[in-house]
Amino acid sequence: MVRKELLVDPSLYDVYHPLAGIDEIRSYNKQRFEMEQLTAVVYENMVDIACVGYKDVTEKEFWIRGHMPEFALMPGVIMCEVAAQLASFFTTKHRILENTATLGFAGLDEVRFRGMVRPGDRLVMQVKLKPPVKKILVKAQFVGLVKDDLVCEGIVKGVPLILDKSGK
Image 1: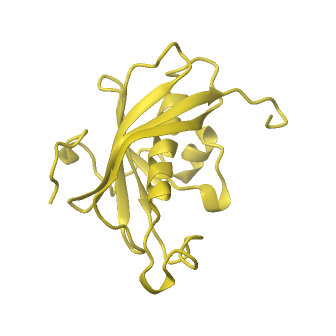
Image 2: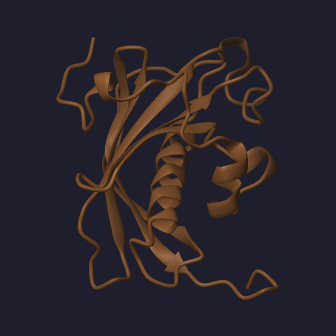
């Protein structure tokens, strides 16, 4: 069971009715192929500057072959990547920072892993943004859930990446 207060009340969203699927996510996030770690977005709230999305963990994840193949376990860094991609999607879509093509990973604080995520699980990630620092740094508190179990929490940081047409 959840041992701490969540960022978004689960009664406010429905994981079976996404607001944004993979095509819309791709229009804001640049990750592709193995690095796409966000399946759908199910909640957005501009008043609280919060959103919720999820990653459906399949048997085909790139890390399964090497990350404890006898007991496949989602690496913590990939859980953090789900949070980062959700924060980037929300920040870019809603122009939290002006002229930002996407966010780049800038760091993590206060991260704790409290449970396991395995193939067949749906990792629901809740993210709540803090006010941007000087328009160059986004901090987002996150919590990850599998069913009612808190599996990870922390703060992810992102910086704007301004890309030209060649992707540089």
